[in-house]
Image 1 (cartoon, one colour):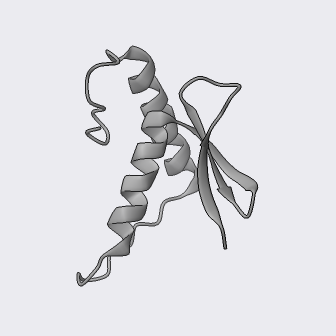
Image 2: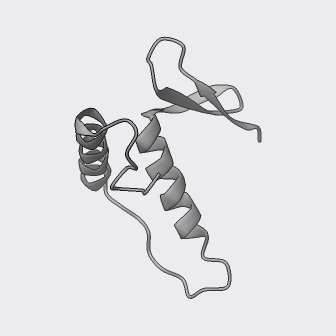
Image 3: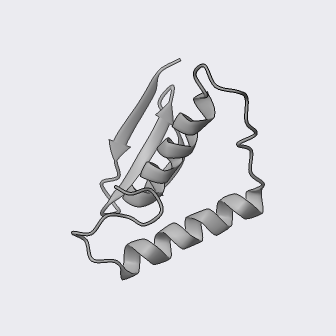
Length: 84
């Protein structure tokens, strides 16, 4: 499996996540950072297992919140959702 992340040339601050050269997600920078944080937290190296699953509605709400924060935030400030 080949995994890569590329900047979207059509949308500023958007990134494509590709698996085997197929785009599976196209996220705004803060959404991508939050997605990476969720994946990282789900790895749980040496920790007790936790359920990090979320419904499609919960994922949609997270994306909407991240977009609203990205649009209203000062570009030099850290993201409140992921701290980056």
